[in-house]
Structure formats: C-alpha cells, structure tokens
Image (cartoon, rainbow, N blue to C red; front, side, top):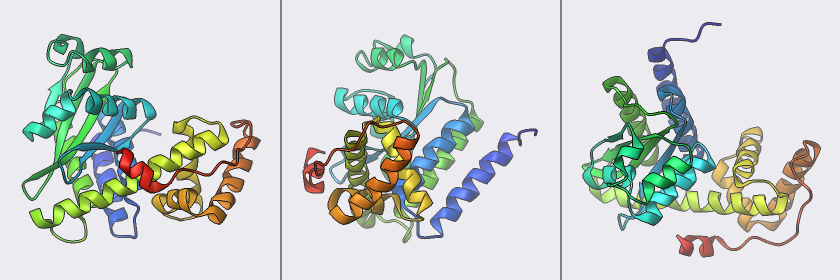
Length: 271
C-alpha cells in the first residue's frame, strides 16, 4: 500500500490528537502518543517533551524511548542544551550538526553524540504569553528542519499545550496550577515504571510499555493504573498478576518480588 502524503498524515495526527481531547483522556498517555507521532512525521529518531513547574524548573513529561528520556534528563542535570536554550529564549533552536556546537554545550554534545544523535531541534510550548516547556527532536543524521518541518513541530507543540490547558482558555493565573497537575501525573507514572521494572525484571522502557498496554486493554487511564500500582495493594496485585503472566509467557521476566513500592510523596520530593 502506498503511504499517504505527509500533509495527509499530519492532518490525521492532529485530528486524532484533538479528538482524544474531546473525550476523558489521560494526559501522560496523550503526550507520549504526541511525541511518537512527532518523531514519525518529522522523520527523526526520537522526541521528548519537557514541562516547567511553577518555579520555572523543567521536568521530563513524555518521550518516545528511554534513550531520548535520558538525553532530556541529561540536559536538565548539566543545565545546558538546545531544549534549555529554547525554553529560556522562547524561540526554536535548531542544531543540524551537533559536533560543531561542542563549544556551546561542552557537556551535552558529547553525551548526545555518544547516544547516537547527530542533530537536535527544539520548539517552545507557549500559552498566554508563557513558555510552558519545549518539544525536543533528536536525529541520528545531520540535517536541518525546513520551514514545513518547523511548522509541523510547532503545531504539535500547540496541541500539547491544549492537552495541558484544555479546560478553559488559558490565562497567566490558570497556567501554573495546571502545570503542577500535569507534573504530578508524570511523577506517578515514572514511579510505577520503576516499580514494575524491579518487580518483573524488565527494562524501564518495557515496563512503561506493559503499563500502557494494560491501561489500553482495560480502557483505564494510564495515570490511574500507575496510581493503583503505587498506592492500592489489592489493585496492584491484580495488575501484577495480569501483566506478570503475560510477560512470563513471552519470556520477558524471571519472576515477581513482593516488596511494596515507595510512596508517591517520596517520588514527588525527589523531583
């Protein structure tokens, strides 16, 4: 079957993402889907989304893989990188050839190239005059984004803003509380990923896939499943039983431990 033109695929992606906002949607799941669609539409190898908290500190909100997640987190730890510059300036930052920018980001560039990336592009997420975060795009090959690519990336960044702020038209007074709600959801999902990874002896990335798969199969919000794993012992055991049986059948896990997860409050304080 011939692949549809990119313009058609962009429209289909936007319509699908916006349609999901009209239902009772899960924010983390929606933004994770958005990063995957963005990577596919722009022919980049990975994408990640950083969101600011009320104190203007950036946090990882969604990513296509643990590799892109690690690179986004490295930028935060090193306090340098294209996504941080994009957030600070409120404008797109395009880096078509990373090694040429080693003088600009002496810690980030070696880490990115070692991870297999040769180009990085970042676009701001903005609402009500406030930069909420950035959408980062990571390519294994050198190359710039053309105007059409940037427009697609910016459009999907706008969709991300709508997902975060979709209840009402945003104002400066309403933006900050919603950012905190979004970040709290991500903390719960991250902790559940780590717990499942340890309990099931699978990678964190596979743990996230299992969590998403369970949520989709049972038509439950991803964040709700994650919260059950962390804070509801009865629901946790039922979820682990279902996921554990499937992973053992597929040969992905060696067994299940019995230790309970740390509290969500502890995870929140770690961030």
